[in-house]
Amino acid sequence: MKDMNRRSALALGMAATAATPLLMLASPAFAKKEYGPNDGKEVQPGVRIVELGTFNSDIPAYKSISMIDIVFQPGAVFPETVMDNDMMCYIAAGEFKIKKADKEFTVKEGEMYTCAKGKTDMATNTSNVVGIHTVGLLIPA
Image: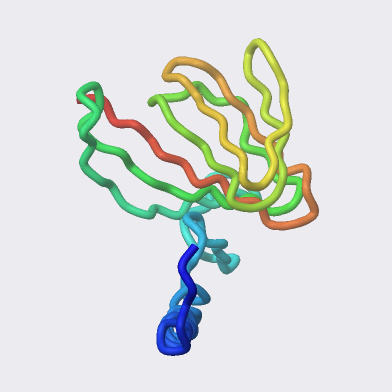
């Protein structure tokens, strides 16, 4: 390794110091959200849907992806429902018991699961905090 002179060391130190504030401004890919009691539309007692937007898809089987947050109060249940679309569900907050026709499992904050069109799904917020499912609904082409 070559020796570093004072000028190079000073330049390196100043560059690192200048970059430090930029690193502190970075946010995680999935930022935590907070919703008020009247945000979105109530679909079940204690369960509200907040529409985030619809985006074009480059996946040939899907023309678009509709993003929503499903906000669950502690203990709230979304009853067993047949899925109209394939979807990906990311747990942004809370912990949920998921019941499908053939299995039950727990999904925690930061984890994902999927649902298939025509299959059933039921979700219960088992945590003592407001739970949030961030859902990508895959809209067929």
